[in-house]
Amino acid sequence: MLRTVNSPVLRLSRPFHIPRVSSLPTRKLATTLRRLANRAVVYSSNGEPSSVLSTISYPDLPPPPPDGVNVEFLLSPINPADRNLVQGVYPVKKQTETLGHSSGVYVGGNEGLAIVKSVGEEAQQQFGLKEGDWVVMGKQQAGTWSSERCVGAQDVIKVPKDIGEVHGATITVNPPTAYNMLRDFVNLKEGDWVLQNGANSAVGEAVIQIAAHRGLRTINFVRNRTDIDGLKQHLQSLGGTHVFTYDDLSDKSTINHIKSLIGGSDPKLLLNCVSGKDTTSMLRLLGADATLVSYGAMSKQPLSVPTSYFIFKNLKTCGFWQSRWYNEHSREEREALMNAIVDIIRAGKLREPEHETVTIPGSTSDEEATQLVRETMRKVEDGAGRKVLLRVENVE
Ligand SMILES: NC(=O)c1ccc[n+]([C@@H]2O[C@H](COP(=O)([O-])OP(=O)(O)OC[C@H]3O[C@@H](n4cnc5c(N)ncnc54)[C@H](OP(=O)(O)O)[C@@H]3O)[C@@H](O)[C@H]2O)c1
Image (cartoon, rainbow, N blue to C red; front, top):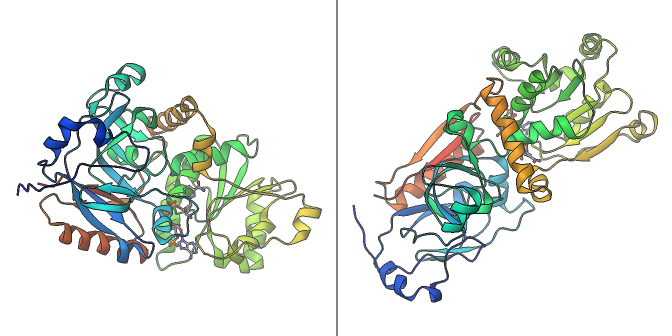
C-alpha cells in the first residue's frame, strides 16, 4: 500500500549526517510528499521492552551528505544490553530523535549488518565505500532496529559478504568481547586453562571457540536443566574441554574431580557474566595470581570476593566493556579487530550463534508491527534460548 502524507522531513538530533532542513529549502518541498517508506522500533520512556517498544514509519531518506552513507539494515540482534538500555539500567545516554511525525523517540538497536544504498562524495573518496557494500557499525547505538538510516562514513566498517548475514549482524559485540578478554588480561599460552560461567551465552560460546582455536582449554559452567547432557555435548562440539553446572560447585567430590582434571595447572583467568554466589564458589578453582574479568551480571546479583583471595592468592579483579574498548581505540584498530574475527570465521573456527530471525514485514501496519515486536520481546524476556535477530523491512 502506498501512503502519502504531509510528512515533516526526517530530522535527527543525534550526530547522524542528515542535512539540516534549513540548508535544503528545495528538498523540503519534495520531502513533504515523501511516502513513509521506512520503519523503526522505538521507545520514548524506559520500561520493559515488551511494554514500551513500538514501531513508527518515516519517509524515504534524502541523498546522504558528502561524508555520509545511507544504509539499509539487513539483520540486527536483540542483545541483553539493548534490553537493559530500554529498561533504563544500562549506563549509556542515548539521544532522542525525530523521525517522521514522531519526536523525542529513542531508536532501539546497537549492533547490525547493513547494506550501503548510497554514498556521499567524501565517503566514497576517503573511505572507499560504494553502493552494495556490507557494513557494520563502528559507533555505538546506531539505532539498528530500523530499515534505513543515514550514518557517518567514519562510523561504519566494511565486512566481506562471504561471512554471511548472521555472522555479519553479530560480529561487533560478542566475538570481539571474547577475543579481547582472552588476549588482554593474562598472557595465555597453548594448553592453559580458562574458566568461565554463562558458557552457553553467545559470548561464552565465542570464548569456547576462540580459546580452542588458540589451543587453550576451557572449563565451562552453565545452569542445570532437563537436557543438560545435550547442552554439554553441544558446548563440547564447539571445543569446550569440560562442562559443569553450578550445582556441581556445592559437591566437594566434583570440585576435587575438576582439580584432578586440571592436573596442577591452575586456571589463571576466570571470565564472569553471571556474578552472585555461584561465581564466588568458582574462585576456589583458580590458582595464585589469577585474574577475574567480569563483563556481565546475568544473575542480577552482586559479586562477593572473600578478602583472603586478594591477600593469599593475589587475585586481581577487573571489568571489561567492549563499548569502552571501541571508544578508546582508533578506527584502524577497530578494523583490525573485525579482520581478526573475520579470519577466524573464514577458518571455520567460529560458528554462527544459534538464532531465530524475526521479520517485521513491510506489509503490516505500525500497530501490527508493534504487536509483533512486543510479542518477540516477551519471548526474549522469558528466555528465548536463542539469539533473536530482527529484520525490519521497508514499508510497502
Ligand atoms: N561487557 C561487554 O562488553 C559485554 C559484551 C557482550 C555481552 N555482555 C554481557 O554478557 C552477558 C551475555 O550476553 P550474550 O549476548 O552472550 O547473552 P545471551 O546469548 O542472550 O545468553 C544469556 C546467558 O545468560 C544466562 N542467564 C540468564 N539469566 C541467568 C541467571 N539468572 N543466572 C545465570 N545465568 C543466566 C543464560 O543461561 P541459561 O541458558 O541458563 O538461561 C545464557 O547463558 C550479558 O550480561 C551481556 O550484557 C557484555
